[in-house]
Image (tube, rainbow, N blue to C red):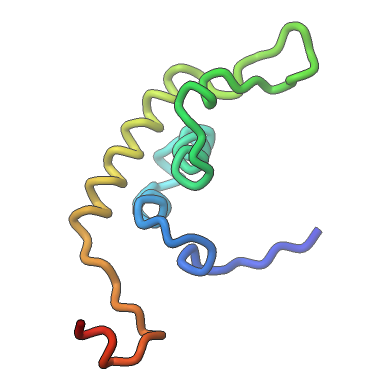
Length: 103
């Protein structure tokens, strides 16, 4: 399978997701914590749904996909991303004619 790297802005207009991905340092933030935060923002997965997710849905006994600590830290990352997105001015849509941007 081949993957194509594209700017997040081409995939999603969710400014909170943009802020999360721009500010999260993968050297400091656990990958699973960042995954939980990203799924919450990008796929509208509730915290309850993320907390109940299991590694194997078919197994009788399965481990949680995310630990409680990862969910707690993901919630903090999302709150930080929301504050950042709110404080950051919206980018000007360069695809619109200048006259329509003034309105």
